[in-house]
Amino acid sequence: MNPFKSISRWFSSLALAFAREWQIVLHDQGVMIFFIVLPLIYPVVYTLIYNPEVVREMPIAVIDRSRSAESRKLVRDAVATPTVALYDYATDMPEAKRWLAEGKVFGILEIDRDYGRNIGRMETAHATFYAQMSLLLRYRAFASALTDVQIQDIADITKQRADMLGSAASSLSGAPISNEAHMLGDTQQGFASFIMPGILVLILQQSIVLGMCMLSGTSRERRRRNGGIDPLMLRGVSPSALAWGRTLCVSVFYIPATIYLLHIIPTVFNLPHIGSAADYMLFAVPFVLASCFFGQTMAYLCTDRESCFLIVVVSSVVFLFLSGLTWPRYAFPPLWNVLANVVPGSWGVEGFVRINSNGGSLAENSTPYLWLWGLTAAYFVLSVLVMHLVDRIERRRARLAA
Image (cartoon, rainbow, N blue to C red; front, top):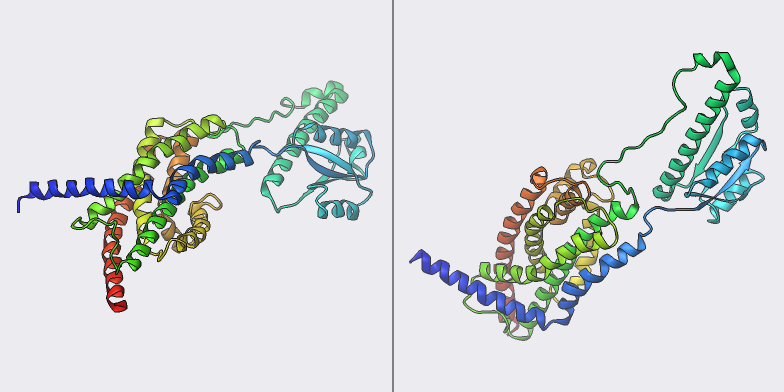
């Protein structure tokens, strides 16, 4: 057989498969919603929820056992920060803990009885802060604000002591404490800046998977109504051409969606966006292809249109955990690391965050990039094999039913 004729015939089959999938997608309102509306609306909703990025004016209770000018200054300095707001002074710890349990405050600042006296004696003064650990974001914000206050107070006290010592001030070496922070990559350090780049990638993957599952579930419903044959499926077209035809059809929707999610949304909402557009668009190609073939492979688990929602809902939680957004992947147990490696979204999150948020280049992210190309090839082969298997199962089921 002439190899050029075989290649020409395969590309002709690919064009036919693409055209047929295009018609099916355009006439399926549910699929169109998940291919167009979901990528458009979800990022906006998520980003609006997490803006503003930094938690502010969180109420605290104060137990001032010292009742001195120094303790009142500490409270004033803490409340002057944008993070902390004074709810009220508590008479004792049980009252403050009751406010904490009722959700009226999120932290308790307890100032020791000897706080003012110890500062006057140039001795160590103690103040203790208690915070709920149910949301680490609040704890981090409180800890950062109070640390800044303490550093400034220490600097002031050091200067006062130097002034009081007079001629002995020369024995004090160094300037008042200077606190500097140099941020690398994401300079905003907000929660949306941390979580949203990864969430946008997972939205892309899950909307692709859901659309693929709906198409497959609908096809299997048509098979059962028509003796094991889908009347909309092309005859005489190789499974590989069918798989690529569906993938290219979906890619027509998702290449623009990728630009929207990874360029327009970060620009509009001022999210980290310091990577090269050429780098993350080149990275998007294997990610979209791998997600499409991954979605086709998962889609054959759907026996009808409704079952796809159960599969996607369950898998979404698992894929979120495996992405490394909630827990670093290097700390995963070995088995979970293996599972994370075979999910395109895990490598997509890692690569896009490094490029878009940290300014990395495509060359510096060659590992996730090559993994995505490998997953593209692996899931293409797997989707073709599963397509063969499902076709045989449906035909046998139709013969038994007849």
